Length: 260
Image: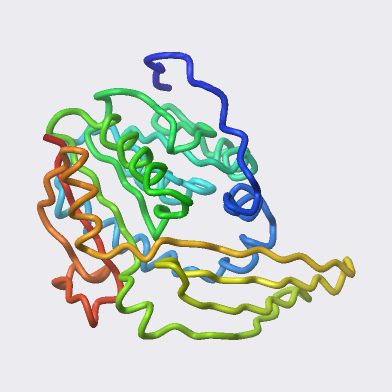
C-alpha cells in the first residue's frame, strides 16, 4: 500500500449531463456492452510495452483509470508493484478482490492530486482519457499523472486516433446481449466524439440512455498538453504492434513520454 502525501479533498460535485462517465462506468450495462474486448490483444500489447520500456524488476507502476483491475493484475503477476486508480466505486470494489502485497486499488478522480514523485511508470490504457468537459480538467488529469511519476519516470498514454475514427465513424448500430438491446448512435460535434447509447433491458422492462463524450484530441493537441506538463515525448506508435503513427491510417495514438 502507498502512503498519500496529503489528505485528499472530496470528489467534486458535478452535473451528471456534463460528467456522464460517473454513472455510465458504474453501470452494469457498460460492462455488458464492452465485455467482448480482446484480452489476448491487451496482454500482448502490455508484453510489448514491457519489452520496450524494460522497467527494473521492482518498478512501481500506476494504472490510471484501471477499471476492474485486470491489466493492473497482469502487471503485478509479473512481479511489479502496481497501484490502480479509478473513479468508479463499483469497479474498485471488484478490483480490490484481486489485491495482494504487490497490487492495490484506490477509488480516485484523476483530476485531483494523488501521490508525488512516487512511480517509475504510469499507464493510461485504451482511451481512458479525454472525457472531461473543459481543457482545464484534462490538463489537471495529465498533471496528476505527471506529478505521480518520479523524475525520469515514464508515461504510456494509449488513445484513439481522432483522424482515423472521424473518417470511419459508424453512425448507427444495434447490438443485443443477454436480452439487453443497445441502440447506438455516433457523431462528431464541437471537436468531441459523441456516442448516444439507448438501452432496452427486456428482462427488467427498463429503458435507459447514456451519452459518451470523448475529446477528438490530435497528435498536435497532445504535444501541446505534454509540453505544458514537462513531459518529453519519446515515441508515438500507431497501433498495438508498435507500427509508426500515421495520422490518416493508424488506429491508435500511443504516446510514450518521460517526466523531465
